[in-house]
Image (cartoon, rainbow, N blue to C red):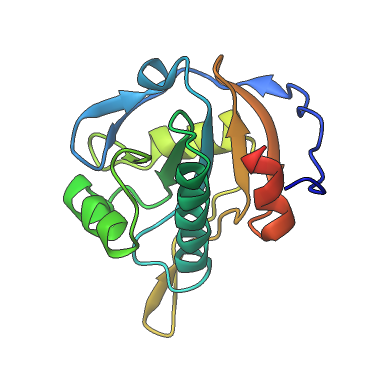
Length: 173
């Protein structure tokens, strides 16, 4: 820890728009409930067979790091890119399967299963890409970013980071 590089605070990029979704418990959640909290945002879908399992593994590793350093404030917030299939009970099971704790994680989906609220937020708010669902070899794939975004207490995006060791080090600090 004495020789670890601590980067300067990342600059403010832009403020995210207000949003209202539901969490993996089926409760309303969004920008109002996250106001005043720092969070690491990521994009996923529960039946993903490519980057999502590795992404969640990285987020659980980050959860453990925060716990080890007694940092109980930072949230890990996942935004489903497949709200039609990712309903709250499925998200709760997905979180439990990967070892995520309710006290740290919030997985979000649209209240009505429609993709428009999430697509607008991800594309216009986070300025990230979300592809249309494509069937390949019997599986459904939805292109989306594998990076995580750091959001400050005022709901402002502070940067995108890789989920490798160096990227997670930057998010951790």
